[in-house]
Image (cartoon, rainbow, N blue to C red):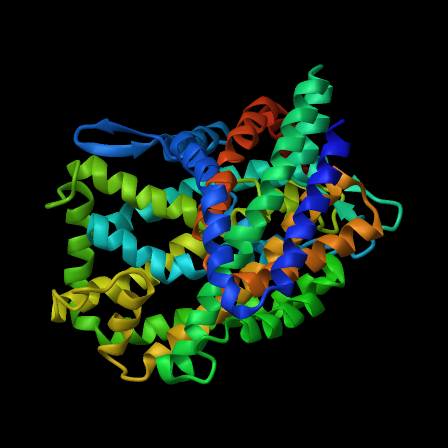
Length: 506
């Protein structure tokens, strides 16, 4: 019955999309309003549940943030701080230590890492950090870094399990992720029905979520940055979101049509370039603000433990910093294991090690560099962010030193958005084929729908749909984390066996 209802839902979904494609531009606003009104009740319900907050010491603490943070702390202790002791080994594996190209899988360790990183490094690394500092002050940076380091442990276990329980398809491709380790892992624990339900729930959530947070939002932000670069309101492309969206959809389509191998080939070149490009740009600004670094470090440390003007004081700034980190690196959401499970390896633990580098790159490096650019700018102009928020605030901090640097920010923003879209296309695809079966028609249908929604994202806001998908993405962290707790002994046993093998080879 579940499959029948899913197919009917897909038909209705496609019919709605076809009607939207055929609608004249003048009707888009009314369609947008109608869709928002239809989705708003469900959005409000899910958002109220998943982002429910309790007030502690004057600070509003979202329970989903507590859920993810507690898991990160637990797994850090459970695996005896492997996020620190295993860091060097993770780098060795990425560099090709004992890589076997004939091992089962589709991509190298490095390619799997860059694909997963491309899914987390997005607009939030530029604009989200600015929002966190606006709300929590410079001290939020400290707790952002702490949460990023703890999140490395969550990534380790979820990507290890994703590789252990991955499915090898007859055509040589691989499918993995929370839906597979929830189903198979719970089956081993004697809970087949619960595992199947949680797996299907997760898969449905990642499919819907990928169309919003991993597609329409990214496309919309990339379009806005493109318009800014090409002249703002006077740009030829202003008001022509459908045209830019169509071009973007074609480019994304050309990448994702070849599956994970094609995506990995692109991300293995794009991610290092965009990460180095943005990091070097930020470092140039930080070096130009070198005299402000003592002020920045002092503001970050003092603000972390004795913040002023932040609701809830120290607890409030902790919540803001941790929230930005978990929303950025997605540790515990379960998206990364879908990419990491495609790795060529006979040792699942190796990809668990590699995955720990993901929150480090995303949060500890890129987010921290953004924060230092902003905080050092406060030294020269405490009010530079007046009336600004998000990416506009970050852009203004860059612009204070280099007048044309907003072009760099816009370019980086577009790269980040594009890389996020191609990674989330794969995440959604694997969720869809889990529900519908590993069929060529299912794969092609999803890719077509995904590209269509890129055009939609550039054309109309669909605010309620974006909010709905955002909430749903964080809702699926609930079954994922439950699965991680239940299956933690499996990962620990595999880690012990792997470490013993490494010691024997030494």
